[in-house]
Length: 217
Ligand code: G6P
Ligand code: MG
Image (cartoon, rainbow, N blue to C red; front, side, top):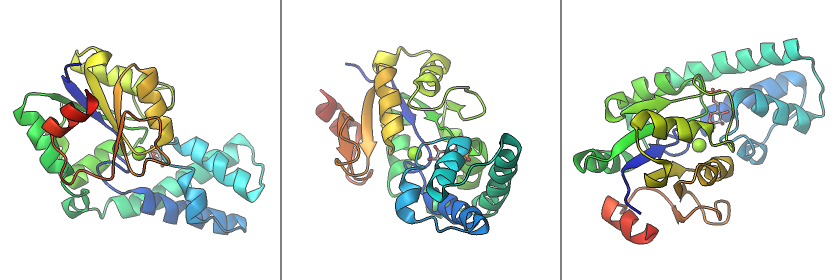
């Protein structure tokens, strides 16, 4: 397989926004009268905003109508944005920028494939938007991961066949989406949670294009 494009999830791969999502969701749970823990928060990784709220409500055993859900999702997002708008380039996870720069030198096409509707805001805060040939985010798709739509759209925008794309993902739903898109997948995290990926790495330290090529063979 010849690697011609790399598609990066954003949250949990390039930057750790999970901690901000957690603080904002925990606040919503507290207002509703229950505790939302970090273990519960694991279930929200890679999941869309509305689906995240539904999981949170399941945890609290609370049923709300659509209007109330929309109100809470917006409230959470306004709170979350307060943290996002204070982010700096220091928060980019170790070595990921070097890896992306290496890919650019090798003329590999590069995309973001993120469920987040805040992806552009985050990329701007991190000052790395110029590194990507295209950004497919939650505003451009109708189906959430594990549906392959996000990654297929990314490949389409890069004009590269899916079979020549590698996806970088930290969430199980994202890995399933990559497999469904007929792409190779590198999991970022621990092998226990990401068993379906072709290759799992703890992070981008000591990682390179050459290494990836060898390991994905
Ligand atoms: C990513 C995160 C999820 C988040 C989703 C939507 O996939 O891993 O935790 O719920 O994006 O993010 P948004 O910024 O649109 O609320
Ligand atoms: Mg993620």
